[in-house]
Length: 633
Image (cartoon, helix red, strand yellow):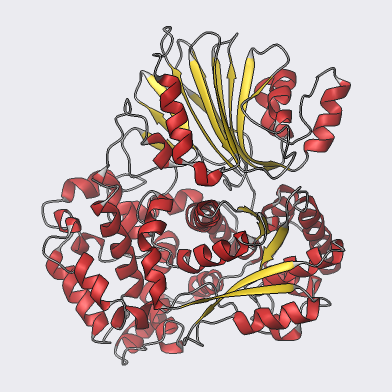
């Protein structure tokens, strides 16, 4: 992958002379995304500067960027991979276009020459790009359909700047992009700031499957060029099983194109095992696989399953052991995310990509499968809750709230208590309760006197549960509960948590991660599968399991989903207690400018005493305070 950056003047005057050095500094700050080479370009008109830093994966010798068209009047910079570049290249050459390289990214500028703004309809892959058309004085920014590759845009009315990471934008001294406290309620609710929001003034994330067009004399416009439809269609069981297998294999094969060593992140779960099995069947060379284990925490450790898979498929297997000392990477993780990040599985993801980078440059990973094939218990819970009468929900809530605290996050009492706490709520509020951090108590967490932040902070309007839930409601498009839940998960948690984590942790180690389950053909097909195919007799991801039952070890087929969980409850009560007190539970913590110290401290101490599990919330606060002490100033 790569890092891209640039700036364009919205007026008729050229940019200042120092604009090029500013853009080069922006790209240099993202050198971890592309340590192999860098380049910049100033448009003949002086209106635009493009910058690029490259991780060489395809066409190692001639694939440098920015890339110009034949006349030098257009230029592009691309982060990512265009998987159908060979067929596009052939079509464009037949239409008279001349190529200077043999890589994938050059097709973008020629596709724009040929099809204009419709070029995105022809691209298949994971990408973010910028095109400057000097003759038309037009800037085109684009992002892939799923949002695998990031792109952040700054607009103050005088200039537009963009970068693959927020830290890149922050290197330009001309930009007014300080911290935006109104994003706090969204972060506290979700563990991230939902797209298109960010923690910075005048900066937004470009939405997936969209293009932003900037032309002289008119306001920038954004066009959505693709949407996924989760409404089910009629399909036979046999057809679904065969087509899922064919499309997964096709997707994996597309992602094996590389001129550098390639491996698989193998957790020992169903998704990564399927990817490993397919890659092993498509390649002759020894496949390298990578996993993380948790020292002294067998409840969280999947490494044993990964070893079984590796042995059966004869991979060259590598493991990294993770213990409480991984907290030493906290500052690195916050810097990589350019802000607080509520998903603690970033810790093992960073460790395993760091391990993988010692051996390969590209790795395949299993993100997206749970969103397509119904892999989360909460999806089934959404269906069950919709069938329970209100009186039964109230009775269940009363019953389980009176029982002793279940210390294990996946314990039955804990699951049942969480289920009944939200089962009687409206669909979108129920969803938010089950995926959120500070939700029902959001107004209590916020410091008295910060009501203005709640009014400005909610993605759908004023803050608080109903208005935060409104943003979920907008994404819940489908004609049944499961379809709406899948759609919500796809456009929120997958986009702003899982894909962000995969990109930032991979790129922090100069690693390209590819996600076969998010191939466009596979997504469009799987999104239309009926509930009876996705789950059956209590088994989630049923069609995916059956489609690959001949290559997945039975011990993996029969186990439930574990996820990349971290032993947060135990670590906060033990080896992390000191850093929690030093950074969060101290009177001079910066987060007390906005949060209620007494309430948060009471909840934290209840966790430390073993009375409740508040570990996910404590992690969210720890990364928030870490950011506020550094980048948030």
